Length: 324
View 1 (cartoon, one colour):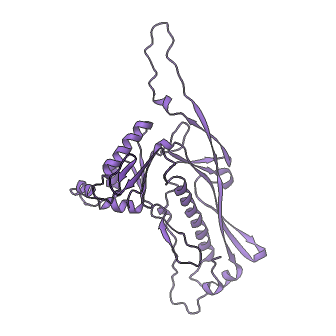
View 2 (cartoon, helix red, strand yellow; view 1 turned 180 degrees about the vertical axis):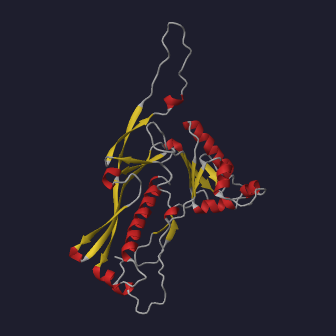
View 3 (cartoon, helix red, strand yellow; view 1 turned 90 degrees about the vertical axis):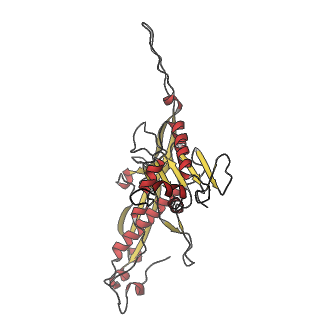
């Protein structure tokens, strides 16, 4: 198990007054930003799902004198959530703390390290639950050429039409649900391809800056929120060569995310956060420090309780392999 040793924390002849840590910025994570967070009082429970078709059917009628009004209703189904427990700790040996040089603040660094581990895990769960095929009502696949039903030409290939592809998905999803998609997640490689796409560059060539930004793409696609998350994950086992990849790679997700959680408020996804245990209504790690006398160490530990659920699959369109 990786752990600073006594020699790591004491430098015999210090040559610098800085240390370097490769901790990713929390601003890069989007798992707490895309879909609404629902603080819940129970670890698991049911929630109601209203059927869609009744709400979009015109049933009101003219009413003649001395007659009853037209009437109707809707169906309600139930689904469940279960907030899973995620945790990670770092032990600080008494000797390591006593022997550390002034460049180090091992207590603060341990707190940052364990909290960052929880943020990485939270992002991984978001990707595993949402940023993939087969969980959304519409699944489109990018191909190098000759797309057929359910396919589109990859956006880094000649003849591709990303603007038209997204516009078509926006129209289809709005027609299906009555809610216009308001969120687009682009993997970093997808944004790179769009920034160099001939059709997009042609449309912005007369703008003030002439550069493709997420704001310009938002206006072009008519989707208010665009996320381009850059977190990376090292999949290599400890002691082996590093193997980094983007959490969000070569695909894209178009979805409707409710501005805030609420009763009778549809959304492609919701995150259920167990607030009664953590004491927090936000999807942020709870970090504590406590004594482990048996190993003469202080333990710094972070925890999260949450469940990320696809609530309305028809409110999402998946663009798989959007670039090659």
